[in-house]
Image 1 (cartoon, rainbow, N blue to C red):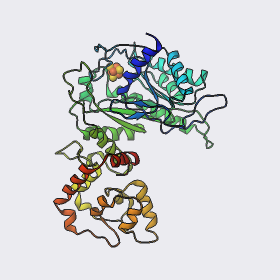
Image 2 (tube, rainbow, N blue to C red; image 1 turned 90 degrees about the horizontal axis):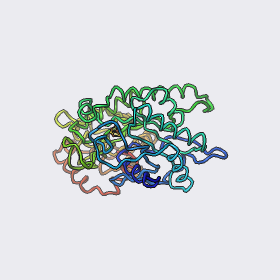
Image 3 (cartoon, rainbow, N blue to C red; image 1 turned 135 degrees about the vertical axis):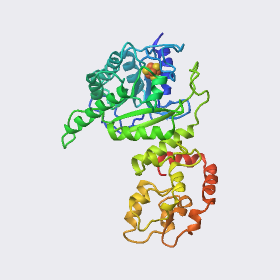
Image 4 (cartoon, protein in one colour; image 1 turned 60 degrees about the horizontal axis):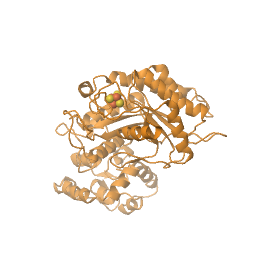
Length: 417
Ligand code: SF4
């Protein structure tokens, strides 16, 4: 196979991994060097559902000694195989970078021989890029669970971001579908990466000088819908990982059926809106003060698909409302549907000088249409019967059916819920 044929096979095989994004790292170009991490949108790699990712996204190889039944690269799959040498990946990355096709590299791999051997090969790519090519662009390496701490340490010294994928939120799912993996092993890798990041921070001087270790942090990925495990379990697991290993991001990737799949797996694609709701819920946990268990109910442990999780919470907890925008604390304001983190801060600043009206909220580009039922403002006091009305959820059902693509994209972009 020549390098182009390998590229076709191994770039295609990498499309199932959604856990890459180039945000969060800053490295300026050095004199005589190549690339930096500040530019965005130079290259575009597309996942099967059309999402755009601006990195050269490759597998070092799609050979794998493991047999995870949700994965097209598992040992029992009859997919076409290929393998790059580290030097070939370095060549492709620098050539694409010079042509402005990409802003960095996302490199993952099937497990060849052993986790250590695989990790060693990926570390070699990053080291060659940084040392020989003086490559200053973004590098995201997949951390192979089970690889030695020493190798993960070295990986973190060259890469901007490391990620060990959880894949499935429940131990029982992993045991059933990926018996060679264990959460204990995956979390050990996460722990080692978290320690490396903390130690590097401790050794960084006030002037920002010091050893670098995965400066863009670590992330992970969950596959959504490959099993019947509900969203509540996934969100609880994510919240634990954020807390325990200072994760920068958890990615949720809706399971899409693979050729010759295990009969235990769903035959249909999981709706993308489920993935979207999980991102919104994850956002609420990280920035809005919600806990994972508030976002679903014991009766329905999956997030509602027809409305965003904050609105769903508000409709279930109407006794919490109305919230007075001129008196309530930030924590209560953040629970109002339509109020985002930035706008809550602005509102708190403005109300020091005068009373806020609905008109003021509209000027802040807050969706008054959505929030009006849940707030008291100067000149606005929704009749209690409106908050308690059985008709209220219906109004939002209609609105969410009418929510256009542009509005959905805006919510996804700003994270304002
Ligand atoms: S270890 Fe990774 S590449 Fe190998 S079968 Fe499992 S998910 Fe696929």
